[in-house]
Amino acid sequence: MAAPPPPPVSMLVAPLSLPIPENLGANGERCSYEDHITGDWYYVPDLSLRDHRFSVPLDHSHPHSSAKIIIFAREVVAGGKEKQVSSSYLLFLQGGPGFESPRPTEASGWIKKACEDYHVVLLDQRGTGLSTPLTVSNLSQFKSSAELVNHLKHFRADNIVKDAEFIRTRLVPNAAPWTVLGQSYGGFCAVTYLSFAPDGLKSVLLTGGIPPIGNGCSAETVYRACFEQVVHQNEKFYRRFPQDIPAVCELVNFLSESKGGGVPLPAGGILTPKGLQVLGLTGLGSGGGFERLHYMFERIWDPVLFPRGDKQISYYFLKAFENWVEFDTNPIYALLHESIYCQGASSQWSAQKIRCEYESIFDPITAAKENRPVFFTGEMIFPWMFDEFHALKPFKEAAHLLAEKEDWPSVYDVKALNRNQVPVAAAVYFEDMYVNFNLAMETASEIAGIRLWVTNEYMHSGLRDSGSQVFDQLMGILQGKKPWF
Image (spheres, helix red, strand yellow):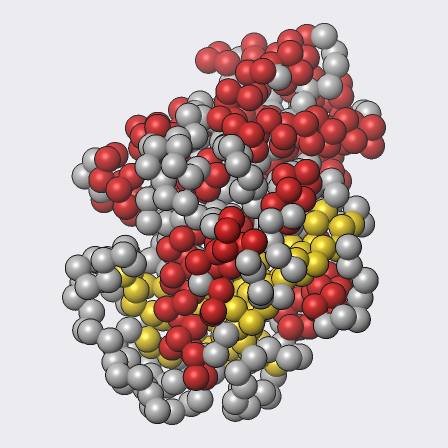
């Protein structure tokens, strides 16, 4: 018997822009919920998809008085199976924070594999994709930085999990528990799920997503550990491509000697030597990143077509740099990145603090003048980014307020994890630049019953690069068909 409809929606932060289709429940029956709108099935090669939109409280702790936002989820099944009723659902939680779920164009990778047994639910986490997205343009609607911070505090893992539970009870037949697959930050959210809502979980798969939760494990602890791996990745990169050492040194010298210490970027802002180092965020930690970074450096300079022409950085290179840095399309990542590690304490720009301790290694101008490798940084946000990156400039004050904010609630419950009874299988990547191996193993020791697959075969992007194999390995571990450690 269907549950009674919840109270009517009082206010929407962002109204639905599409016509409201016929609303159907998980079993295809007509649904009367005012907070759940289901679209018609549509198709891409070998997959059937339909869209769901849910109206949820901005603040789940005040569900009746809070403003409402829209959460978007895309249901995916193997082609031709859209009419088959199943209670086997798998929720995918994307990495980030602040990035939307993948948009499938065909049946491939882990999605194809998962659709053999599950209805896959691709969730756009709040503030991303089609889930009342927070964009560079609409964030300007807030009247003050303090008001913006008060809004952003609701966009961490605790509320993402509450959104997921809201969706599960309306989407899955009989509100049955579902399996959650968490990649990177999505895995952090899945561990929050294990901490506070384990009854909603049938099993959990983590790929490069075991968060640091140990006693005293602050943002500063995380970045100190991560910088060590970043140094290692830089050394590996330059061993692979030693010809890039003089190329990057030449570029850094050009930037430092340019007027204002850098050159303008096509979309605004400025490329400086320390801004250039941000390329390591993507280039050093994901599959194929070394190669793509090297090929990018092949096209730094415009050819000089006439004698005595001025040397200048190519538009190709400057545009490629902007394409690698996605702050203009996903500003939540920059604004909330350090806060994901905060529980009852402020971050105080921890990455910047630790970088200063490594300044003899990471000072790009000194390295270039001494003709030694210029090291790139990793998954770190620094305060100067809100001066140099055009899209982030309006949020400089808010970023500083977020860095000083102390009253972040806990997003993990270690005692609950010690009592965990939900089957968990995790891929732990030995040389993961984004999620430190040692900190991940410390957390794993706190999650009762977790089964680990430790590998150096893949980088942090293993699920994207070899999704079918990674997914199959983790499912095999859960089912007792694969070895685990």
